[in-house]
Length: 256
Ligand code: MG
Ligand code: MG
Image (tube, rainbow, N blue to C red):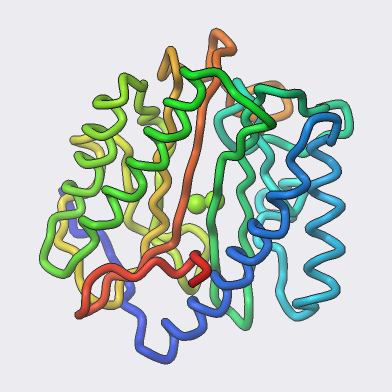
C-alpha cells in the first residue's frame, strides 16, 4: 500500500479547527430540543439556518452545496443511516431515532459532528443501539494518541459495536478534516480497511461509527444521498472531530 499523504496542522491552525468545531457542537446542542414527536426533519433545517445566521454569520454550512447536497444538515431517521436530506414529510414520532449531522467552515477550517437523538421514549433494543454506537465513539477516541496505529481506532469501533450485538457499517466511515471537510485518511469502522499508518500529533480526524440494529447492509435511495438499511431496520451514527495532540486525544466538537 502506498503512503497516504496526511497534512499535520500547526497550533494556530488547530485553534481555527477548534473554533469551527465549537460552532458545530453548539448547534447540535441547540437542535437537541427540536427533536420531539410531531416535529419534522425540515424543522431542524430551518432552526439551524436561523441559528447560524444569528450567531455565526461568518460560518459557512459545509454540507450545503457539497457535491450538490441541498441542505445545511444531514438528518437521518430510523432506517436512514447517513446523508438523509431533511424533509417536511418526515414527521418524528415517539420511539424514533434521529441522527443529526452538521458541518461548518469557519475562516478556512472545518468542523464536523453528529449525534443520534431518541424521540421520546425508545424501545430497549433501540436504547442498546444508541448506547453501543455512542460507546464505540468514546472508546475509539481513546485510541487517538501519538504513535498508535490508525487501525486500532477501526478495530475498537468494530469490537465495541459487536459487544453490543450491533452490526458495524463498514461502507461509510470517518476521515481526516481541517483545511478541507474530507481529507485522508479514511477512518474505517471495521478492521482491514483503513490505510496502515501511525497517528501523529497535529492530525485531526472525524471519527464516526455507524451501526445497524439488525443489519449492516445498506442501499442508497434514488435521491442520490440517503443511505438506508436494506430491510429498513434502525441505525445510529455518532461523530466527533478529534485532534491527536502531544497530550493525547482532544475532542474538538464537544462543549466543556
Ligand atoms: Mg458528519
Ligand atoms: Mg464526517
